Length: 436
Ligand SMILES: [Zn+2]
Image 1 (cartoon, rainbow, N blue to C red):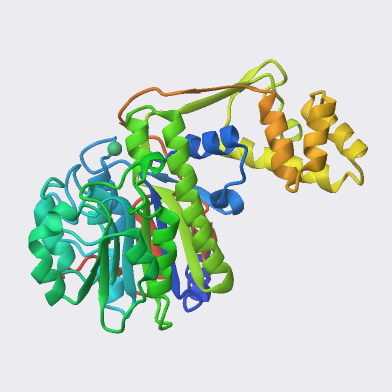
Image 2: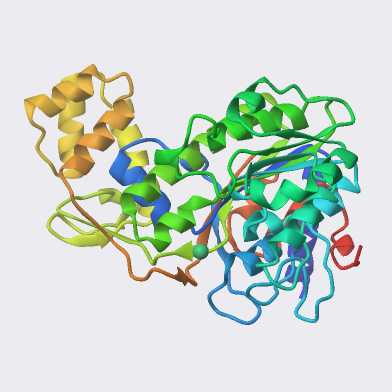
């Protein structure tokens, strides 16, 4: 009993220590992004991912109130309000009681708030951060709710739903942007809000984006620029919306492109957070889509950790293995003073033989870590398999950076995410249960 009290005290204390240190919160949601989506992107692209730069990561369970497998509406509601609801519902309990979300609570507490997505801004995930409807299909109603919301910055697609709301937009002090060029040159104005809708429907997939449509990192950069302008605290939700769409299509190549764009947007936020260390950056997903599995054989990824199979075996690459693999590479680099030593260490550690061409590619590279990674992965037999075209109940990762990040490095429920955010910024989570 004493032990439990002590643990509670310690948790309470650690939350108090961080309260006040956090000014801004940027929440990234990769729609449908399971941990294997991240690992596959890292592995197949052989590129350092911004989201993997932290050592503080955990897992989030995603089930909804009426289904082991959630949809994006119930998941967004959980992530935005701290309440589980039935699939299809947004910002409401099953009895249609309206529940306030993070942007409402935070903007009532002096925060500027914004959302940035690559889907229609009336789609389920963004809607969870401003809307309250019984069915996610009520997108016209959601558009009206968005216009009446406290959001300061809204970037994404879905202009069709706002055609008849132009007067309301003006009345509610929104500047309306239609192209990437307008967005890039836009300077935030005092007392003005801004909505940028760069496509009638969802933005095009990364690989087919038109010249008028901005990228997710471009929108993220502009949103942060506007929200951070006068120094008041801000909350921004950024969604990699189409990771889910490519996963429903079981399109691995398309998926990787979407994850890469999402990760680039995370890079923009981390750059801001580095200069503004009172910024908490979280990266998670609403659910996993596709039941993606990555199998690798013929390679020893992390010999010393006892996590991987020996050569010739087959293994599923998980996040721990990936992290250890990256650490092994860092270690062989730091323990080698010349290219010969490096060659020997790599060969010994990963039980491979390097060809002269491979050694040259490592030696000539500006980024040795990535070069070694690519060479090693190139020797592996790597296969990605989808097990469904639907969502799954798999736990999704959460990566955290900045003050309070350690509160997310465990297994959480999706409803814990907004509750912990509010605790960390010292806003009572009891305001979550009051109806607005
Ligand atoms: Zn989906």
